[in-house]
Image 1 (cartoon, one colour):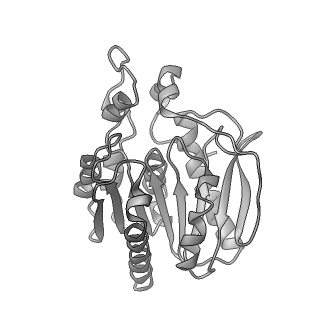
Image 2 (spheres, one colour):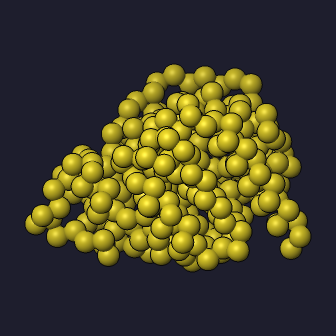
Length: 270
């Protein structure tokens, strides 16, 4: 179990958790083709579910953390799209989501993502996968992705943030949490802007123009804070938080493909 550099316990109160997490179960285990269902142990008696869509042992691997109302199996159709581009797509659930055990908390989510990352690096090595390792987070999953790059930067070759939140306070208000008297302040939150500022490898930010949950200004804040010499901000015109794929799947995947190729080139030149 990974140690945390930040104390997230202020966010573990029931009135906060009820707004952050919306777990949904998934009971079927359909292992077929290149996709493999895994259970990753994160604590004694608790494992989190993951599905690895593998295509190419020399290709890049995208480790993906989804949004708060989603589960790994929601991406069963997208995994093969990545695979057709020669990209391995590895998706992870949170506690209480999909086939995972336990109950979600912020502290557990942040520990588990690092534990899952360490497990996955070992799994990739043992199974002969040698390509670039790219961490990606969508919406709530941006917190997991940024926690990983802040604690395991030496093992990450690139970062993708899609519909991610730069600031916790505005998001918690949009989700319906009354912060008056809660004692919560932004300085006690996730520190996402600081984390991306300290990650200097390639960065891709994808954000909807009219996101009503996490405004485009958060994506811009990430881009502005990044100190990477290879960074890109892709605005999805006319899109909202949950319709990016229906509006611009081709542009989205083209950006991912171009990004993974730049990461590969940068890594091979070192």
